Amino acid sequence: MSQPFGPEQQRIGNQQREEAITALNDHFAQARLDITEYQERVNRASNAQSYAELAELFRDLPQPHPPFLAPPSVPFAAVPPPQATQPYVPPQQYTGPQQQYTGQQPYTGQQYAQPQYATPPPPGMAPGMGYPGAPYGYDPVTGIPYSDKSKVAAGVLQLFLGHFGVGRFYMGDTGIAVAQLLTCGGCGIWALVDGIIILVNGGTDAEGRPLRG
Image (cartoon, rainbow, N blue to C red; front, side):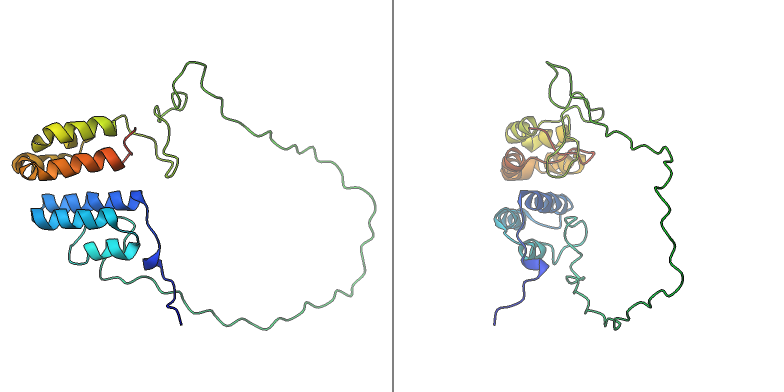
């Protein structure tokens, strides 16, 4: 007999892998992981296919964890057993006098409001410029406005100046940037891996908005 399919076996995507790598960056910056452990867990996170594989990377680490994972001490929530249903009791038939229909109901004058549609931006304006608060549009998956920071610029800065944490300073991630500055970008290895991850998967700025392309 096959095993039941649980939430820990569900497939994941690039967004979950990116959030897991971001959490590992924070633990590395707090010196909870050495460079060897950090690289090994980043590789495992990049190749993970299910929630269970990502959860295993944080089993021996305190918070922060990726937001989609429960704390290690909390197992996946079990589905509660179905509650017993009450027997069906048919409604009693109404035996009183029937009210005779006397005609149409009076018109009360209530009208339905016309649907409102968003006005497209004027010709020649860049996509998203017509929407206040989101000059670069919205992420089609999460609906969060794109950041004014570019993932290409952040990735290139991290590749060439990552030992100073310049790419992370540009993104507004000062915690990791200071850690890279103090460790010379993990002897260059951390900065190189971080730059490649930013170029491939992007990242978020200090306000949690995804970097634009």
